[in-house]
Every structure is written in structure tokens, then in C-alpha cells.
Amino acid sequence: MKKFYALLASLVLLAGLAGPSLAFQPESPECIAPAGPGGGWDFICRTTAKNLFDLKLLDHAMQVTNMSGGGGGVAFAHVTKERNDDNDLIVAASTSTAARLAQGIFKGATADDVHWLATFGAEYGVLAVKKDSQFKNLKDLMDAVVADPRSVGFAGGSSVGGFDHIKPMLVARKAGLKDVRQLKYVAYAGGGEAMTGLLSGAVQVMSGDFSELRGFYESGDIRILAILAPERLKGFSDIPTAKEQGYDVIGANWRGLYMPKGASAEAKAFWSDAIKKMTESEAFQKDLEAKAIEPFNNFGADMEKFANESIKDIADLSREIGILK
Image (cartoon, rainbow, N blue to C red):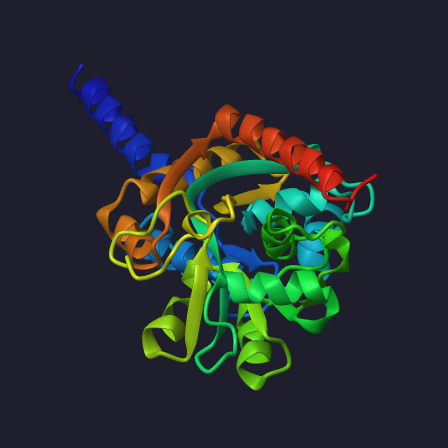
């Protein structure tokens, strides 16, 4: 009997030691940011990589890969066609991802081609100019746009028809521009490159999200003419909203992640659980707060439903402003 209990104890001990090693843990975790460094997608990946590792939710440091092109289309095709069964891969997503899918820019791709993991934040868009710009407020800018839509160049980190393009189109429509497709928009590979275009004088206005421009705003290199929010941001009460200037436009950009559709159920469960735990941490919330990103959480079935609804809403909007027929 003593031998039996000794053997039983040994088996229990071995089972305890083997348990964690049998659970899924990515060996080469990677996050693809579908644009160049410095933009919103890059922020998603680098912040996620840092927090998952610091919180010991990952055993290995996560690699961040910048893969620009097609407003996220290059990365989307890479994931769905070449790495559809990669358990170690996650990809940054946002309203711009939904816009590309809504407008069919991803060449027949649909929301069902990937596994949607989560949203964990949302932020508002801004329109900004250089500190010495001739445009002192949003009315100055819109008056010039309505008078001659091609006289003002707008820069953004998303491709033509993406969310950075849509935001100034919405404001211009409120200003009275009948055909907002006339708006002059220059697409850059990411928010960092778009900012370079603004500061170099290649364009006159940058359309982006507040997190992308905050450092340049605080350094005094740029002025933000308007934030597309319902009310002024806490801590940045000197930035006026478009609404209070007579242009009732709200431009919220959600931040989140997707992963390959063909990944294993264990991998999907791991990433979903890890990201949820990350969003609940104080450190991650501080990172969002530092960028003026508001918490906005969707996980599991709620995330899949939200992604599809977001795509439908943008498709309807795209038809309304003439991007889609």
C-alpha cells in the first residue's frame, strides 16, 4: 500500500510539472504593424509587445514587424495567404482596417478571412497644421478648401479612401463642399511619414489621430485646428472640437488586433486571454492614457460582431460620400 501511494504521489507530481509545458505558449511571438514606424498601428504593436512581456504573459520578447502598403492590404494578404496557420502571429487593426475591407480594397477579402481578437481603445482624429501655417482655425482651412479643393494638400497615414482620408472629407462636406472627392489627399506609408510631409511643407494639413501627433503638438511644432470629438479632451482643453467651430463631425478610431483564421484553437484562446489580461493591467491603461486613448473593449464573439458592424457602417458612409457606388 505504501508503494501504491508513493507511485500515486509521483504521478501527481509529474502531472503538475508537465501541465504548464503542455499549454500553448508562442515560441516566436510577432506583431505586424501594417504601416511604417510612428503611426497608430505601430503604437498598437509596440505597446502590446512591451506589456505582454513585462506582465510575463509571454515567455519570449515579441518581434514587431512593420509591413506597409495598400493601407494595410499588404499585411492582410500576407497573413491570409502565406501565414494563415501561424499560431505565433497577431496583427494591429483599427478603423482603417475596417474601411479597407468595407471598400473592397483588399481584393475580395472579407472580415471572415481572419480571426478578430479584440479592441482595447479608441481615440479621436485631428486636423493639424505647421505652427506658422496661414490657417489659424478650422474655418480658415475650410473656406480655402471650399473655394479651391485642390489648393490644400492633406496628408494621412492611410491610403486613399482610408480613415485619415475620410475624416477631412466629412468636415469638408459639412463646410459645403459638394463633391468631397475633389479634396486633395496624399497617402503616406504611416503617420510618421505623413508628419514628415507636413513639417517639410509637402502638404499643408495632416489628418491623423491624436496619439500620432501629440509629441509634435506638445513641442510646439504643429497646431491642432480641431479634434473630431464630442467635447474637448481632458488635459488638452485648449484644443477646440470641430463641433464647437460649426462642423458637427465625430471621428473615432478604434484600436485592436486580429490573427490568422487557421491558427489552432489553443493559440486563439491563449492570445485572447493574454490580451484581455493585458487590458486589465494598470500599466497598459497608463500607456493608453498617455496617448489620450479611451478604453474601448471587445473580445471573443463581441469583437467579431463589432468588426462586422464597423465594416457595414463604413461601407454605408463610403457610399454616402461617393467613395463607393
